[in-house]
Image (cartoon, rainbow, N blue to C red; front, side, top):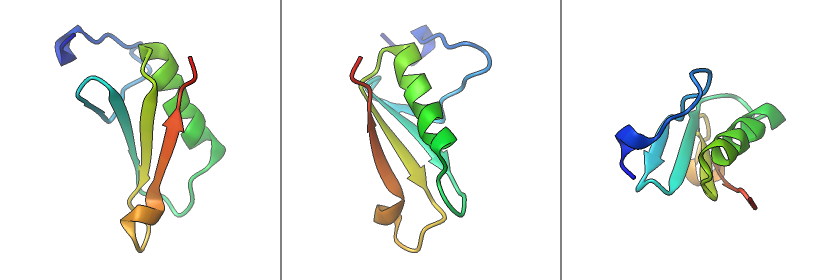
Length: 73
């Protein structure tokens, strides 16, 4: 499946999909909230993907802003 073949509801738009396997949702907020995690999990469920990364660029160290989310299907 190529990027052009991926169809998502118009209300949802993933920031980045890598190798058609990992969905990356990018934020720049003071603090990640539960709805940020739920948003990414919804994208994973809609697309049937298993792995997502929620990245908050508003951290002093980028490694502190990366959260791994797994869809257990």
